[in-house]
Every structure is written in structure tokens, then in C-alpha cells.
Length: 272
Image (cartoon, rainbow, N blue to C red; front, side, top):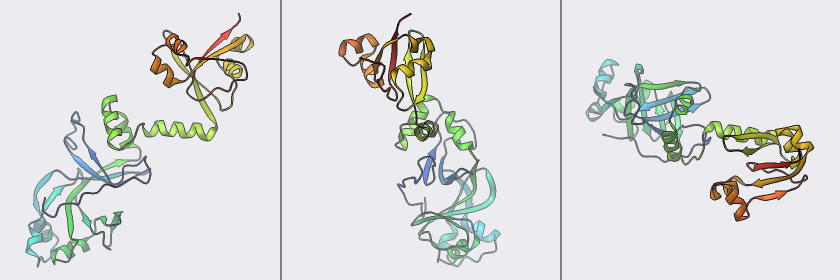
């Protein structure tokens, strides 16, 4: 790729957004607009997302664009630069991803030394040999409406979703993080009850006692409360069963005043 885009490893300021990241199409994606594509996400926020596909060549060179816009190209080398297919939206609109970012009329600054420009002035500068040192030119872009990209990512199957999250150093989805943060702000936690054919989560206030938690399940359990069998989720997973957790000593018997912790599995012993 002549005068190719420099490689960047940019950290997202907001982990919910994908600005300055590459979005690689999953092998199972059969949408002809994005099949086997790699898109550089130039902007992603609560209003939507804009990306430029960087691995689809076209039969157009920069000289063709200079001619169409009546730009005199004194720099003949720049006229030979390839123009790439940036996406299916507004195929007549050009974008230049470049470094350094510079100061052009319509530039979205992506990093201290990286920008994407859609104004003519950068093309005028390139034509006379005064443009950015490194550049990538594309026609069209990929666009997503508010929430659309997130919705498409949510449709990934479990294996694909895990692979996608791992590629960005994430362990859970944006939705899971939103729920977790909301619970924290509201002072809520969850505990679980498990049976042979059911596992259920119960939402309570942080600081709730075992007997009060029993009442969330059923008032009869609160009235007849004797003890609570409590085991942490990680300990139950390591043990494989409540019986083995009891054998290992990780399942504890707690009284009425015990404060239930987030994520614990609780079994209420009761009379009646």
C-alpha cells in the first residue's frame, strides 16, 4: 500500500466505544458490503459510528480524482496513488486518513499525529507535493446509526463475542458493564439460589442480612429462618457441587445477622 496508513495502538478513552480501533469482519459474515473487510473506526459515540474500510482496492487512482475536480497535479507521483473503497455510503465522497494530522478545513483528529480529512484543501496540497507525509485515500465510508453497531455486535454468537471482547482486552460486554455500574450506583447486589433444575438471581440492597434476603425469596422462609448455607460463586465453580463445597469447607453456615455479599449462592434452612 503506497504511502500506507501508519500502524497505531490507541487506547479508547471510553471502553464502550471503538474509536481508533480496527473492526475485522467475522469469517461467518455474509453481507457483501462487509464480507472479509477490515474497517478503521474513525468515530464512535452515542450518535452512531463512522468507519473506513481499508482493504478493498478500486480501479481508481488519485489522478482520476484530481482530473474530476480540476486540480492541477504538479506532483505526478501523487497521481499514481491508489484510491480504496471506503464503504457503501456516499461513494462520491472522499476521505484522506493521514499523518501528521495537520490543520485542514474539515479534519477529525483521531490522535495527536493522525487525522481524517474530507475537505478539498488536503487534495490540493497533495497534488502540489505539500500534503501529509503518510496518507490513505478512500471513496465512501461505512456508517452506523445510533446503537446500530452495538446491536450488530450483540448478535455475535458466544464464541465470536468472546473473541471480539478478548481482542480489545475486555472481559464482558458494554451491556454487562452498564448493568454492573447501575447496580453499584443504586446500591444493589445479587445473590443466587440453585436447585436441580433452576438457578435464580435475587436483587437486594447492599447490607441486607441473611434473614431479610430469605424474605425476598418467600416470607415463609424469613419467618422460619434457621440458618443460611452460603458459598461464594468462585468456590462453587471450583468444587463442582454444593456437597463438595461443604466437604471442602468453603460452604459456610451463617445466622440471621450475616450480611449477604454480591454473587454468593445462598440456601436457606428453615422450619416448616
